[in-house]
Image (cartoon, rainbow, N blue to C red):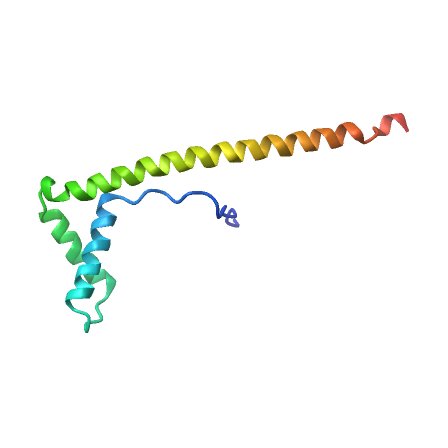
Length: 108
């Protein structure tokens, strides 16, 4: 089954608190050990262990950032959906006007 084409204008989903943490953790490890070339699976595993060891207070900044991302995404998605529905209505009105202008076969 072929994949649906993806609309380039559609907003991307919000990033989770854990994904924000992993991104930060990975950047820290790269800065700390620039000479090492480590497999991403190893880095992700280490970051996962750190995330599990963190308490809620330490996770708060990532959760707050993720909440802001989620709110921003909802706003962008609502705007995108309004634009898409307006485009669809316009396309439907154009199609119906074309149908009204073309003579019907029954009159020929």
